[in-house]
Image 1 (cartoon, rainbow, N blue to C red):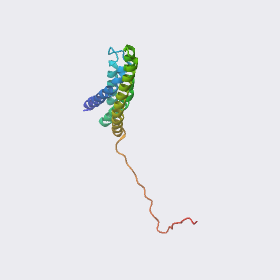
Image 2: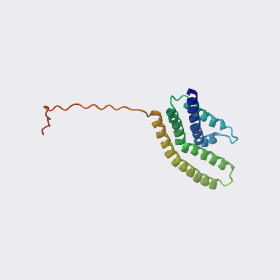
Image 3: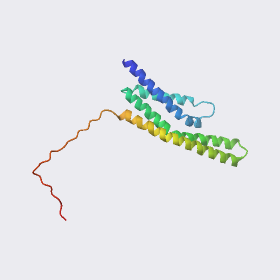
Image 4: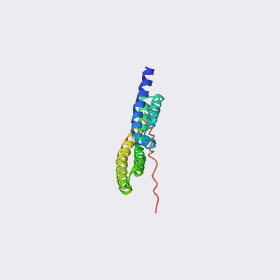
Length: 161
């Protein structure tokens, strides 16, 4: 049973690592040379997710750590898209004959892509981070309420003006 839990926690981490890797693909593409030489970074992110899940003490914490990794990656999506759109705009400017038209079009496209990814990234990342924090840090919490007994002979002193 112990080995089944390890495999399950590792699978949870790997699946949420895949989500994290997909969210970071624009950043990997921005730093790549166009030949697909940065695909190994995706597998590193999946491996980090699997390791986080493997070393989690419980299945709930494995889900929490995976959601935290995915939340941070999705929250970074606007920055990734901004890097990718800047790289594409730079490449288009070098190849184009009409510099002004290309600059205007690339600026509009970059703004649109970054804005849409910011909308998705901030909302989705916040939800994933909250779920991850609840799962990672949540648990049984005990609240002890202490009430002092009211003494009937005690009078209340009010300040005088």
